[in-house]
Length: 230
Image (cartoon, rainbow, N blue to C red; front, side, top):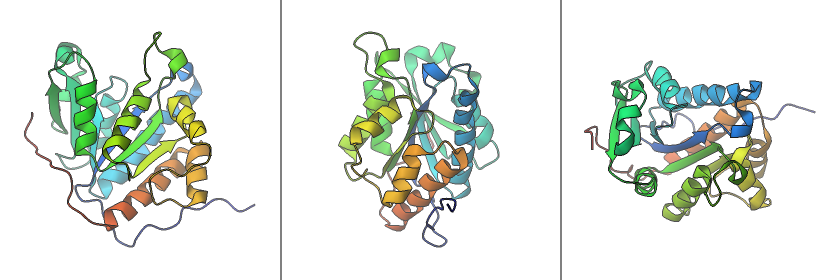
C-alpha cells in the first residue's frame, strides 16, 4: 500500500502575519512515557513551518510549552508570537516569557475565560492537540482544549480548525464525538482522516500547514495585531 501523501498547498502561498491559535498540552496519562516526546516533536515541526512561511503564533503560556516555543522561535524574526498569561501568575511564570521572541499580554482576571476569548478573537485559525481529559480533571472541571475549541468555533464557525489525534487526550475525544463529520477547514476526507489518526509528528504538522496555506490564499485582512505589550 503506498504511503499517504499530503496534497500540495497553493503554490508560493505564504502565511505572512497569518495568526494561528495553538491549544496544546500533554495528557496526564502520557506524562513520563516515551510518547510524551511526540508533543515536542510536533511543536518543533509545526512552529518551524509556520514561522518559515511568515505566520504568527498565539497561545496561552503553559509552563511545559513556553520554553520550547521560545527555543524554536529564537531562530526566527522577533514579533511573531503573542503569549497570553494571567496577571496573577506573573511571579511564577517561566523566565522565557521575558525573552524578545514574545509579545506578552498579561490578563487581569481570576479565571481563564477572558484570556481564552481574547486569544481566539485575535486568531484566524486554531490547532488543537492533546490535552487533559475530563477524567483527569477535578470533579466538574472542563478540559482546557475542549473549552478553547468551543470558544474558537463560536467566534470562527467557518474555521479553519484542526483536531489532531496525535497524543490522544481530549482532542481525540472531540474527534470521536465528530463521528466522521467534517471539520470547518478545506482538507479532503483523506487528509482529515490522516490528521485524526496519524502518530507521525511531521505528517501531522505538514497536513495542518498545507491547509493553512489554502486558508491564507483565500485572502482577507489578518486579525488586529500590535507588537506593544498590553
